[in-house]
Image 1 (tube, rainbow, N blue to C red):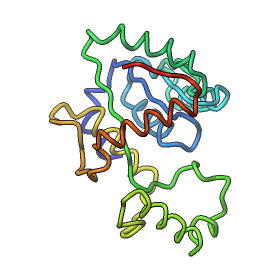
Image 2: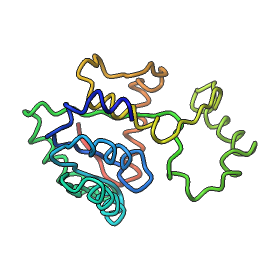
Image 3: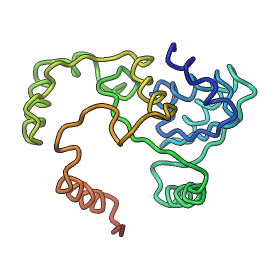
Length: 199
């Protein structure tokens, strides 16, 4: 990845925490890509420990000098709490975090779907209806899927470019920054996990 070469010096010797790490995922591809630049340690997180281990093994096979740690099980709230406490303790060390939306990128995320189910008119119609219900008039207009290598470049850019100013790498839709939508999502999340969170 050409972009990675620009940041190799910023990666060497660093400790990098990445979520969503399972074989074939953006998180795994990001970790595998930056391992070539020699970080001190890659802390990997995901929902399935055996898949995180598989991704760690792939990194070790191609970059044996890079240390890996399996940090959290994203499906367990207690695991989140332990990791959040650890990460919070590092706040004084100039810790940066980014949450990214890569657009449409070909990953293993929809492995359970056939290609025809993903791209049929029925799926597209229901997706467009869902988008309209959310207030997004565009639906899938201008769909331009990216290969995994291109999709992960947003991770590299956001994680390593120190000149980024502000919270957004690209312009966002108004509902993505809506306090009302944030509150609705917070309440729904509490309902789904069966727990109240204070902030």
